Every structure is written in structure tokens, then in C-alpha cells.
Image (spheres, rainbow, N blue to C red):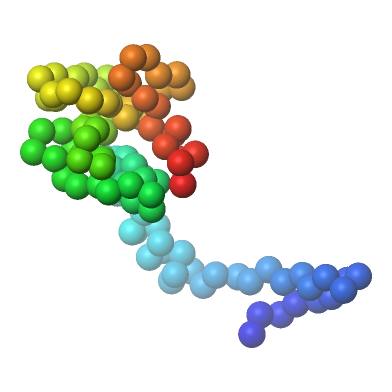
Length: 111
């Protein structure tokens, strides 16, 4: 059980030092991440609670069998999904969307 102290009927947990072996494993696991996988994982994790998400033949994902999403960087174009209706690009590294290009961070508000 963690050490804690109590003040005014509120318990405060004391800081716990993480052993260096665990910190080094954490650094190994997290230092070489694939940014594409991170973007796609973030997108799916935010929508999977309320929406049906499937892999798409063109684009990355189909949401509710209606909307096709391509996930990518700010330079991602619609070239890969240009012939499809209801297409969107969820783009990382942009603050404001334009037309069917939506900032990826906005999907965090859906969860």
C-alpha cells in the first residue's frame, strides 16, 4: 500500500520513486513510435465508443458505413480518396480545418 498522509480529512499520497529499470523500459517502448500508428490509434480510440468503425478499402476508416476518413499530417491530400462521397481528412498539425479537412485534435472532444 502506498504511503499517505492526512490533512483536513483529505489523504495525500506521498511521491513514489520509480525504479530505473522500469523507467528505462518505458523509454525503450516509447522512444521509437510510428507517428502514423499514433494518429490512427488516437482517431479510433476517440470514436469507437459511440460509432461503428471499420477499415476501408480506400482511405483508412469508414465510420457508420457512411463517412470515409483518411488520417494523416497537415500535408495529407484527398488524392487517395478523391472519387468517394462523404470523404474527410483528419489532419495532424493543423489548428483550423477547411472544407473536408478536420484537425485531428478535435476528435478528442467526441470521447
